[in-house]
Length: 151
Image 1 (cartoon, one colour):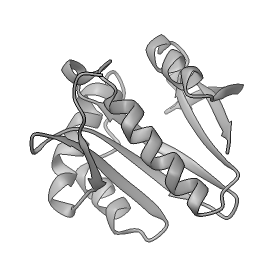
Image 2: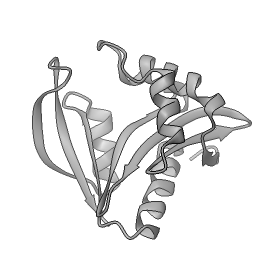
Image 3: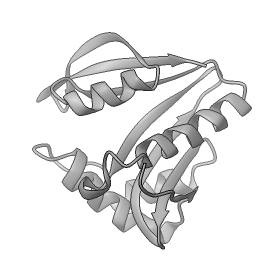
Image 4: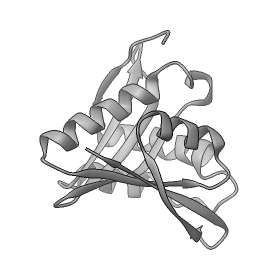
C-alpha cells in the first residue's frame, strides 16, 4: 500500500464526482443509471452509507452500501483507475465491514460483472465467496456473479 486515505461519509457535494466515476469506471458499455440524483438520494437515505476515500483532499474512490435487517448490499464500489492496487479499495471495504459488524449484520452481498476478473480477485482476496450467477443482471446486457461474505 502506498498511500493511506481518509475514509468518510460522502456529502451531497460529492454526488457529481461519484456519479461520473461510476459512469466511467463501472458502467462503461451500459446505459448510465447511477446519476448524481440517484447518488444524492443514497447519501440522504438513512439505511444507506455512501463513503468516499480522500487522498490529499481529492476523492479517489467510493462505495455505496444499503443496510437491511440481517445483511448489507454493496450496491456500488469504485476506485479511480490510477489509484487501484494501492490499498484504497481495501480501506473502503474494511470501513464497510466494520460498520456492518457494528450494526449486527450477518453478511454482505454484492454483484460484479462476470467478466471482471480484477473485481473477482479483489472480492475473493477479502473473503467473499461466489454464490451464483445472475443472467442478464446488468440491464439484460451482461451477467453478474453474486458474492457473499459472512461476518
